[in-house]
Length: 154
Image 1 (cartoon, helix red, strand yellow):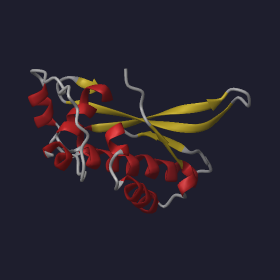
Image 2 (tube, helix red, strand yellow; image 1 turned 60 degrees about the vertical axis):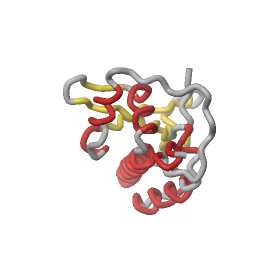
Image 3 (cartoon, rainbow, N blue to C red; image 1 turned 90 degrees about the vertical axis):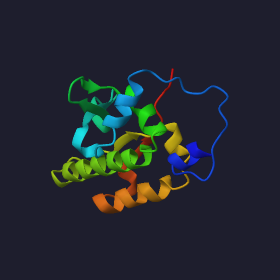
């Protein structure tokens, strides 16, 4: 139940295999307390329609810039954000930042949809749809510019 509260959910699924803790987990968790925008970078990668040979969209890729370790990939810090209850705030920041960039591109004539990877735990959050609507409204872009993706897990 405490896991559900940390993730801002009213429910939680039983997982008989707890997530293993690593010695660096505590340090990473403490470092994650900073506002996400202060340490995260969103990179954009073009999606290409090979038949038409043109860019048909953009995927927003999140990286965490750690002051000592440099760029850290999501598979290292997303589990920490999920366990510490910060995944909802991180998802909001990524959505809003990516959609604001999309708005800037649209203002220059580039009408490209943006795909945002959303963690599996975020898909379980009943407030996700409302948060996406909020981000679309705040960024002032139509819903058709947003594409949701669930990252593959090993």
